[in-house]
Length: 291
Image 1 (cartoon, rainbow, N blue to C red):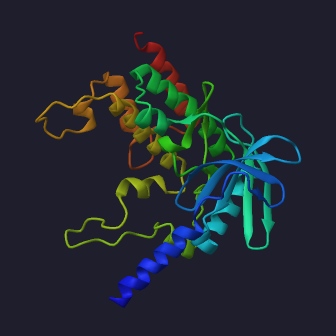
Image 2 (cartoon, one colour; image 1 turned 60 degrees about the vertical axis):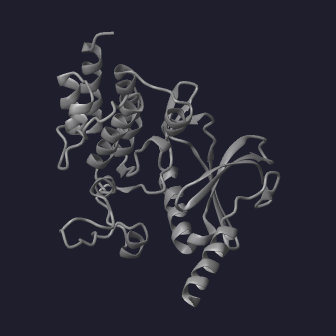
Image 3 (cartoon, rainbow, N blue to C red; image 1 turned 135 degrees about the horizontal axis):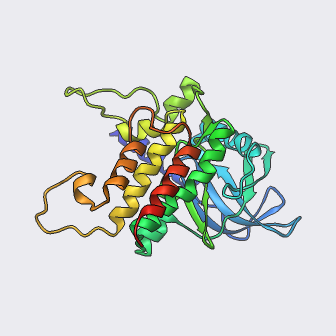
């Protein structure tokens, strides 16, 4: 009983520590919080006014309850963003440390993320529109891979639409291509080899997520494949009593598109030398589709 009480108290304290900062609060003596944007597993994001420059910025701080792991990930993200300069990647502005607090300040990308547009606004995309989204995202990915990094978290919440320009955001899980993270950090992120149950199946980490976390460009293409399927299923209508089918049976896609998506979802190396080659082939595929 006391173990349960202690656990609940611990959860309450963590929740209190992670409560969003209030609007109007000036953080680190410079950034006035305008509103809370959202939180991930390890960080919180705020839209702020920079009281020195007068510009609107995004301030990301590590979740207090995540302690050293959150700070470690935030500093890694800052170091990576400093190396990048692409119109579809938020620009790094500052990394600030003050006492126990640290914050990553970057360009504020205003707009809706793809998850909100699909799930909350009920927006649907045609086949050609969905493939065009994939093509647009291949541009920052090709740049990222050429710079020697892999994103490792290509999902619909991490795609922002700002006036028709798509941004790939949140580089908190990014790493160098081929980099093996320290065991302590891999354990905290649940990226250690999964424990198998009596049936020999992974019980702690899905195969799909583990594949997305591999430090190789194929992981990002794999994420794009799943992102495309999310977009297509957003407008899918299930029939009552319909049996569970694979995406290839569910979705009425041209054979060329099915082949392209299969190659994105390959568990081994995809059929492209780079994201740039993938984009070039996709452009030809889109051009050949009827309006």
